[in-house]
Length: 251
Ligand code: MLT
Image (cartoon, rainbow, N blue to C red):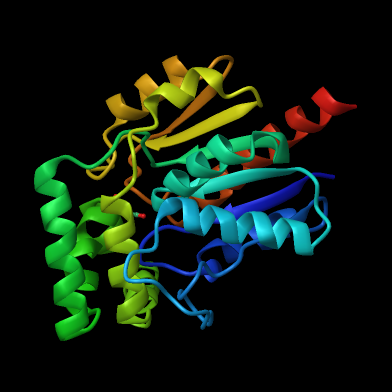
């Protein structure tokens, strides 16, 4: 049995991982919290929620649950947070799963766009962000063929608290480049990429894979930015195989 801590992306909530909790909970202790301000979480929020601050909340959660080591599984912003966690508390990890994410910082144009998004969500609510992100999350055929999935992702983004979304956008803009951390990752690591992800190109994930010693990469074909939603059975299977590998290493 592994402890698995799932970290959702932006602008999402813990229920994003329900399909993984269901598939894995018979064999593993699984946690998928709402990050600060997301979903039902109502903790106070700073103007910018840094990746380190989210990671510190998660470290507290592990402490409170009496969990010494966990496999961290983060998607996109969740991966940025996982890398911040690795930097500060590497001894609390037994494995790492990085999904549709990257280690580098935002460039100047992206930082500017984040600030505009933060101001827009505070002024107009979450709809413009939900509407503009949706087409980037899943490729066109998936959006055409799976209206229920599309609606559930859109609804999830719409129901987030604008203050939390703005704080997350500003926090992402502040994140440092963590590529130098990658060669120092000393736990089993799985990377999950989509070959049709416009937010994190496959080449970016391949170079992270090359930089993390002994890591594995799973490239999901025809998949965009949300592997766990778009192809849950394959995603869960790859995750379960990886968790088995982590356990064997510690047996
Ligand atoms: C996410 O899915 O968490 C975001 O797209 C990440 C980002 O905007 O960099």
